[in-house]
Every structure is written in structure tokens, then in C-alpha cells.
Image 1 (cartoon, rainbow, N blue to C red):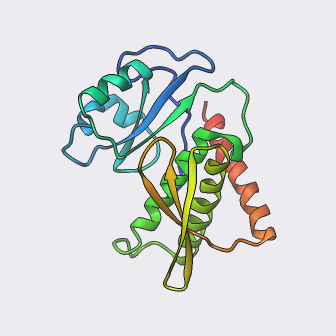
Image 2 (cartoon, rainbow, N blue to C red; image 1 turned 90 degrees about the vertical axis):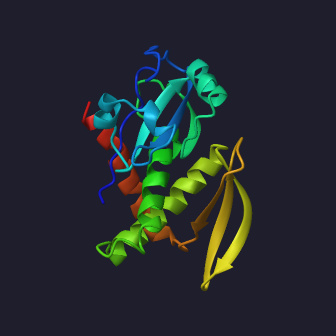
Length: 199
């Protein structure tokens, strides 16, 4: 699986309201492979235009439409609050939109290890590193909160809660050294730049 990144939609996918600079809105992942309420909110155009996870499509909504989804009890796989960023590129580890996309794509690879025999060991290690670094970045930006530590199969895991929700997210600590971290940061900057190179 390749890592794919996209910029946020310029408008609400529900009412077509164009987001203003620094305006807050909500981003969510809908499981389009499932027959549920969230998948039915994603149009065919949106499914074709989204980049990222194969079974999950991103839906960007203004706050007013998001409140309507809550009233309708529409359930998404995950969600987070975004803010329409200035047009200049942010450093990867300070780019909220990029970090969330990286985090969920890395976690998807790790969750499919048992069912996908084609995943190579170096890809697994890379996904563990990406999940860990992006989780720390999201914690610094107060999107995640460290709740506890757990030990499992001689490995240490960090357990996070998502701000404003009861979602618990467990991330393996890959014990990254300084040299590996430096190389990771370089790679993240290149991955983050993909979204702007394609515009």
C-alpha cells in the first residue's frame, strides 16, 4: 500500500459552502465498503475524488452540516476538527491535516497484517514508525491525549484518547533512535509536499 495524501476540500461536501481561511470545519472517514448511514452520505463524485484508504472515504463538512449529521445519528469511522489553513505549506509535524491522514493510513496497514500476506516487514516497521511519530505530533497539537501505557508480547504501547471523544487508540512504541527520527522527519516532509505538488 502506498501512502496517499490530499488537501482538504475547499468546500463542504454536503451544502457546497466554500470554506473561508481559518474557518473551522469537520473531517470524517466514512466506510464506503459498509452498508451504513455514513457510507450513504458519500456521493460517487466524492468517492472518486478522495485519496487515501481504499475502504474509507474522507468527508469534509461545515459545522452546520456536521450538527445535522449528529442529529441524524450518522456514524463515521473516525472524525476530527480542522481549520482552513493559510495557503502557505506548514512543516509536516505541525500540519494537522497531514498528520491525521498519515496516522490512519499507517494504522490501516498495521490492522491488516494478519489478513494481507503481501505486507513486507520493512513496510510494517515503516508503518509503526509513522503511526508513532504522527501520534506524538497530534498529541502536541492537543488532538490526542496520552492515557496510559500497556505491555504486550514484549512490546510497549501508548494508549491515547482522542480529544472530545471516548475513542481509545493504541500505538506501538518502536523505540526510534535519533538517527532514525531524523530520516523519518525528512521522509515526512517529502510525503507532505505531495499534496501541493499535485495542485
